[in-house]
Length: 383
Image (cartoon, rainbow, N blue to C red; front, side, top):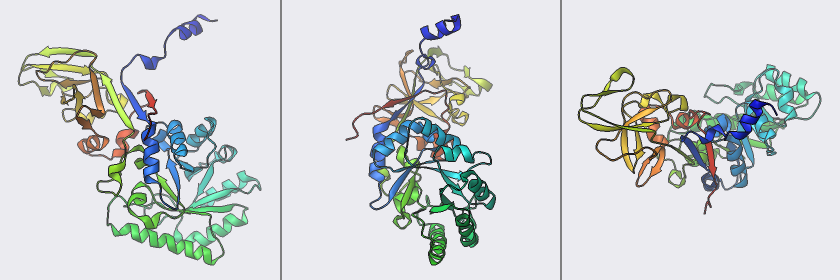
């Protein structure tokens, strides 16, 4: 055995050294899937972006165990990784296969979304006469990607002529998080018009789907045959006030430990730029997590963490690998537990709170936790 290989076998995994970790509760994933299950539609668990930062494979398995029948991803590569992990459930790629990826995607048994003539032609060429089920995405008003509704009949006729099966028809809402916004109803009407025109031509896709998490929770008319649940299965509501939001269990807890403690006199200034000035003597704790881990630099001086069951303000600028915390006169020691997101005692810092502090969406908070933060999984009894 080479010396380098021998050293590697003797060393513990590098993820064991640093105390910063995200713990994902798979029982919470299962609970949320069951709590959100529509009465008559199937459920697609969307696990793109590495399961919104939670881990695509373990989340996908937990969701399927709880009753989801489909998984949804954004990238061909994401779907292939799930197949390589042994997951055999139907996987819909929510964007059109990029040029050159069609063979690999079909070889992995991924279900394609199509919405351009070029994409359709490439897919048919890769299918080489095989009967492939496709899901056609209709742009009903979000104007990101999708087929113009006026082209639906022509497009579906082209797909059928090329030997492809129209297995699904779907759309995506732009404002479903905003309760009462009439645009969701308008998109539903546009989608229904396309469905009716296709049925008039004898085309009846097996699956119609439109509902994202917010619509699945608040717009029952959008459920159709499949609901696509993303953020909500992770225990996070897409917006305040959505029906059923109180029943969700947040699945991610982000923690670390105090790495260093120092007592500084009043007047001292802290971190890059020296913008945070102590107006009195204070205990400063250093925590080994920074913006390279996904803890936003925008939380500098405004964010809080939990130590000893109390909220502690970020002191100065969040740095790449570390942040400092103003603990005042409270006793703090190296090794004390730190909660960046989650509960400690009676206090809780939520992803929603972090998003509000930096002016972004909850989606971004969990997705931006970087890969260098280890994910650990617990699987307590959901009941």
